[in-house]
Image 1: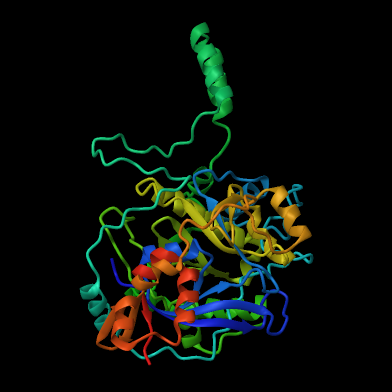
Image 2: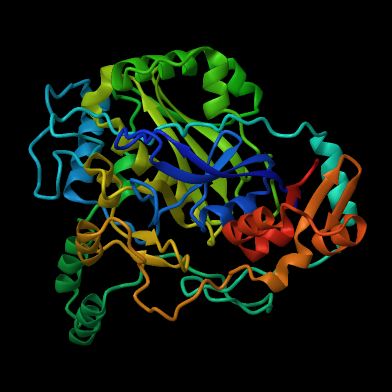
Length: 481
């Protein structure tokens, strides 16, 4: 496990990228020199999100547009009619080159294709890049500090915290492996038992045929053929691989075209692009029980024949694939590439989960109900919102939508007695890890013994409450004078 090293910036105010209000977007921010993949998983499960090396968490009860972390259960996901229509359109285009002049009509599930659309039907919605604070992090030798922190830490075994969605398993190595296959519905099981008793083979055959007509996401995506007029190939590239550098010119040109056409916001230069979508505080960790590509930050590139037409920027973490950003060639907007990219990323989750059962979620960033053009993220089935107070997950239902219509900030957990199980309390302060200078790392208790009470202790406590007890004790807080 690598050592996470962060510097907390405190409370931030900036222009809102959703309602365009000035200095009304309120958040907490910190710079991450390095993040362990499990630590970042724990942080996003507390409402944090990263842009490059900058991590931020909205002050939802105060900010103009509350942002709720949203995820989709990749193994429970079901295709909507709109999803299927987009997949068929892509397959039709690949097969014979047919370009639909305009999207087909809606299906009563919202916008015509469930893509990022406004009333005009143009794909415009995208999570804006956060405004970075006018601060510079302390200059440190990250590798040297990481070695110092590892030497300081007591060796402990970190056991995964049990959750309602993933029960803790016993340590019996001979236990049967967990199956991710969808369970049969009770009605289907009763029908099959009845058919077995009757010995009606013809009826069984008919029933099986009927049940198999429902195509899965994998069925739609595995329809490639060498006889197709176009070939679409996906390539997963780690952001620090040589392959990323070889395709940098193409990906930057695509990003620039997208930003100008869709957002009227061209990037300043190639370095600005790299700072936004290549820079990451995570290393490519490859534990033996992890996915083949490992954990870390990647670009999933979409190559149509020999042309790059879309890029999905993602983080692969111990429990999820987290979408960071997605951009595409506006010339191919007729393919609804925003939604198509989401479906491809869910397929990636399903593929990884076959070998790593714990990694079964697709995180879509933030759901902003008070911003109508950002509600599209809630259209995927099996979606859940994170309660901003107890950090538990709740299905995104019509009842929750109605409550958000009434009041934009909501504690999603209706039990007033429910508490955050990872809550940081004053009794936990002594074990917060601090970097005091380039050669001194100590927990808070030892720090007070060395230098006396810290005048900035309130800031340390605020940070610790925001990241939770586990991360406050595991990550290294840069507190250099």
